[in-house]
Length: 128
Image (cartoon, rainbow, N blue to C red; front, side, top):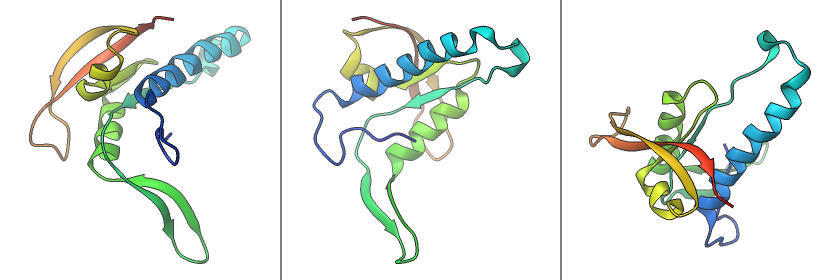
């Protein structure tokens, strides 16, 4: 899990998240160039934008800076739909990056924990 827009505000946090996923895929392709196909890992992304409870969670023995809430759960559910090295984003994220990415709509998907379907897009290309 990666967090954006915390602890410092980032007005372009959704674009940063999508860009990080795109950069990871680009760099992995270069990294895996000399690997046999069976040795290559698929890395799938699920990105959702919204509010979350963010901060240090734990005990005095172990403290972790993390985020919890529906936004985090929805991102995780979107990631489980992803396969074959895809970057999937929610409508909320797409609304913030639509001018900077080329996507393919995958339509509404019912995800665990949500009553309403989540509209999902696959990021095909990031525009610079």
